Length: 428
Ligand code: FES
Ligand SMILES: [Fe+2]
Image 1 (spheres, rainbow, N blue to C red):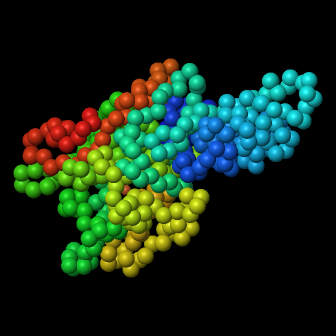
Image 2: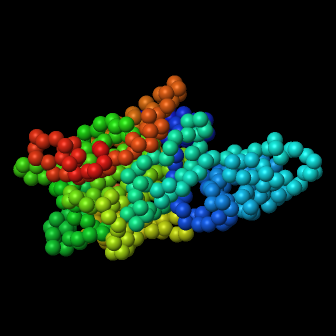
Image 3: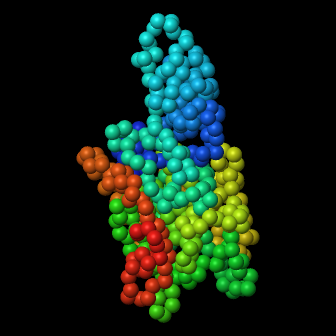
């Protein structure tokens, strides 16, 4: 539980808030490359960290991210003409380049130097790792782009989806680091199926979950890492061994979930990027560090059963708050724990159901929430450090993001970290 002051401190990200200042030290993904497909294409209207912005790809292929409001008389640049290396406001023709400089002001006399005095707020934006990223902090502290495992791979080894979510970014990220909910929320086990095991479906919406089903109260260990937290959830496997599900939380809003125990399997992860205090973009990433995805695997990822939610062209999920995520009560009774199709939709539905900005004064946290407690503590410590002038190590060290998640079976008494290290190429 958190008191209201801490809850606000943790959640709110607008300009001038402590958490807002902290997040502005990080590069943040915010668009798919398909949203700005070619030079001089139509600009995109977007909100990020509570700021209304317009993104465009200029004639050279460089990406600009400008304040939505023209500094002349505040018309929206979304309606602007994207031409000859700049975005031109359609109201009186003022034109701005990706650096925010006013490069043409045809409504003023030719001899005027007014245009040299006018600038629009602009932020650096780059394409990297299958996404378009923005940096909204002070230029003097701008770091390199984070070397996240999935970002460093060729396109054919990763699948990325985007969807909007109507809940605060922290409570959404908390759902992503919560290793205990998978025994329930994503489970295909119901009392009916316990009594009728032959009816159990084998994949998709009702997945047999193995050890996460047979042991529903994992023991957690949480350790600080350079870029976030290493979270291990230990479950009973058999008489001699434990099953460890080792996940990574990477500051400020990334999670990494492990694949199967067998080596060579794909990994999953998320980013929850704040649109404002009450909504965020969810980027879901599946990647295989060892090989390209097969056509069959790609098809499965877009089937609507996994972490990649099905959306409309504006990235709004087809199953959403308005239609109660298309919950099927028959399905819930007989086949799956939720009756909601899709792992992504199951996560989103519960995270949104907490309220757009949850009231943490009403929580009762147990032992299974220890990773969430550690995440909040780490975030708040980082923000307080920044308030005292200490920059975040994670934000300034892109190499610290080169880590992976893993699941391993380990002989009781042996080190799970040693077992995981054996499995992984990257350090954990
Ligand atoms: S409002 Fe944009 S040029 Fe006048
Ligand atoms: Fe989940």
